[in-house]
Image (cartoon, rainbow over all chains, first blue to last red; front, top):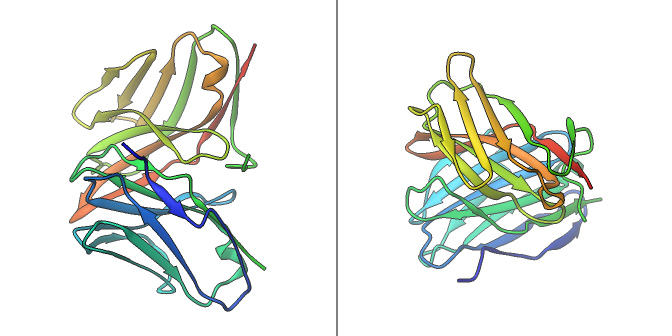
Length: 112
Length: 113
């Protein structure tokens, strides 16, 4: 069974631009969560989607948004990029209500 | 590989010794506690979890202990191997409609051969 895939793996953007990251969960998994990982703040929860509905959101500004499609694939968008948005963005999927999350390799976003 | 954290607490152990990684959590309403392992350049990998109504759970070479009185979680790795070198995160899961996972700061484990 293929694992969680994230595209692109690396991205360089300029301040003020926007970016869209994509996540394909493991087949059959319906819950997708997104995390931001930085050396200073560690792993921080962004949001969780299940059956195309955002069920939970972390403490991030409205510039961070996401969505989930009917095939469970998910995207997250960051608008008006700031230097502090430079981070590794991780996507994780789980089957239904399982707490066992499977993480993708992440997208490394650099904002210059 | 990519750096997970530049200033993480580090535990250095000799190959074959047992390792104990500790974690303090904050939310009394957490349903599950989970340990993840993250190797350089990879996403976190699930190791073991424990329900909030348990105090101990064993897996293959790993044991998780939960002390709810002092909000403390530990991961014990028996006969530590070089392949165990990684950053270890504890995480707490709780339901608020959907579920939400809060990660601890992480501990870097370095295994000396």
